[in-house]
Image (cartoon, rainbow, N blue to C red; front, side, top):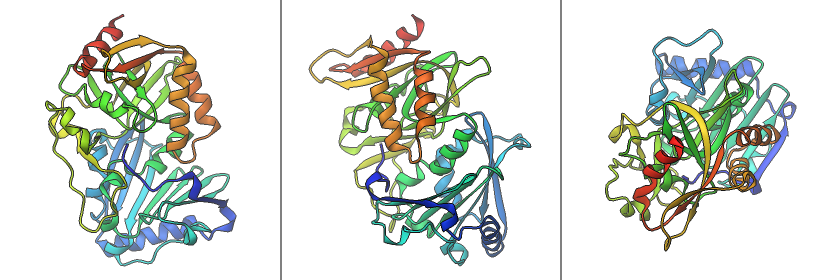
Length: 365
């Protein structure tokens, strides 16, 4: 997983009433930024089966936020219930910053400040100077960045994740810290904490007949019949740079870090899967199982069934820790989903090239 400025040990939460954040002020600031940038550019995406319209004040942030979700763009104009996000940065539009949640001024670079209200939540990331505000009552959100030039590649690879998580959760769609691969008729999510082999497992299937829905974050929902479905969020692959050599057949076009951007705390090679494997990127599929990888360098690579409790131990803590604001709702949703699907352990051994074959065999059984 890419490094990011999020730490539960350096965060602060306050009631929304303690902040001067005003919906009218936010919209007004966006409008002023849009006027200065020469107008608004709009893009519509279907994420988690829901429509969202991203409205940019000028084009400064499009290149930083859109590549990872390009595979989810829709040309049908969206729906009447689409969620609207107004997006701008202060530097390119020469506009003043919006009010940030109380306590944000004293946070270290890895800190997050949150302001919570009944119908609204605001999240400020101190290191990259971004503010995300979600207003469920108005079905609208705002995203502000102090300077587009500061946004690092690891932030661009998972854009708007706080907004997407909070909005999708209100629609019954749960963010999950997981990868996902499969077929149109069904597939697996691959779960575990950072460094567990989640990304390596997911990316090892590129070049096979399996489809790719993500290797860091995906989303899960229930269909009308109550059956779980996995949704792609980001089409971006990430590998520890030191591990890239372990995948000699993997076709990678790395995304270079921008000069002046906040440096990553871990050395990751980031690339967009559609650049080299466009036919494998999918928007999602029915969820058939949860796979927990376990690194075991001196044993054969094998896929075996495990108890539900073992899968939950890998799935839930990782998601709750990595996704800011995930709580009881996420716990209940993921437990319900896990009880409906197969739970397996993937022993990552000496022959990882067998992974696509093992997954295909498990999907056929």
